[in-house]
Image (cartoon, rainbow, N blue to C red; front, side, top):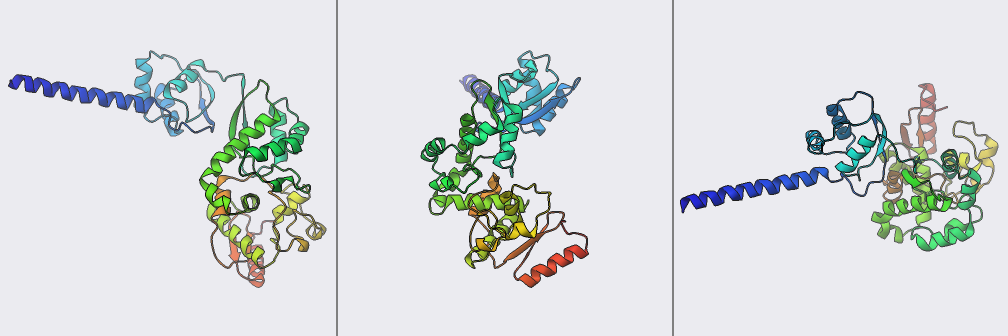
Amino acid sequence: MKKLRILALILSVLGLILIGCFVFYQYNISPIDKTSKANIEVVIPEGMSTSNIAKTLYDKGLIRNELFFKVFLKLNNVSSLKASTYLLTKSMSLEEIVIALEKGTVDQDVIRLTFKEGENVNDYAKIIADNTDISSEDFLNAVKDKTLLTNLIKDYWFLTDSILDSNIYYPLEGYLFPDTYEFSKKNLTSEVIIRTLLDEEEKKLEPYKEKLKNTDTHSIITLASIAELEGIKDEDRKMIISVFNNRLAKGMNLGSDVTTYYAFNEEMDSDLTSEMFNTYNPYNTRSSEMAGRLPIGPICNPSLSSIDAAINPSTGDYLYFVADKNRNVYFTKTASEHEEKVQELKENGDWIW
């Protein structure tokens, strides 16, 4: 009887070990993030050892365990991983990653396009034209097509009739989420690209949906787009939005140079003139005629952090800010304090110009 109990105990322990091994195995072969679409570039040079490949994949956040990766290769009789440059995602299982490394080639029927934070629709159009058979003109016409826009407003809760204002340069500016995307080359159209980017925007905005229902989403995206270009740190962007909100409440113009660049289609490294500052344009917040008003629409496609800054800004009574050549931002409460800070930056050689 005692022997039977010992045998039962041993079998129970072995069973638990087997279950543990199975759970461990399934955990390590599963994707790191099933929802992730972002492409991660992995360079495997000629002659790289399996250990270094495992370390590279682990450092990129694509696998959970370096040792398990090497054991998995042995269990599946994988003897050769090819040198190449790969675009992998965290939504790939370990098996899918290994198959890709075995093949050593990128799917020729798939094209990958990367749109960066702070880029505008014109920038997107150039990227698309350089990498697909869709011309810049075709894409720009699509983002202004009234029939398509009307359908998109019906399909996406965050798009409103505000984007249909005839003074807006590109109605979808600000709403095409910046990220890296994969598209099939077959039958690729401007609408497919637009809807794919809007789908991602919808996912990113979903956690804010309740808050956005009680506010003007178009204004939020517009503020976010300005903050995207005015600051680089999250905390600075929240403060910048706070300054803009304070100025709007007091009926002041925003006085943001980046809106003037957009208004006159000037490159950000070019000089702006006093004539530009004083010329009315519904995007140009340096114009006195824009006092107490936001630009008519976004001026770029902002990152999620900038959108969050516009939804959850800092609070305070600052009315001015200025950035130095290193993109550090300084906030002041009065015009005289602002001028003093500008003069200080110039004297210290930190002025941006």
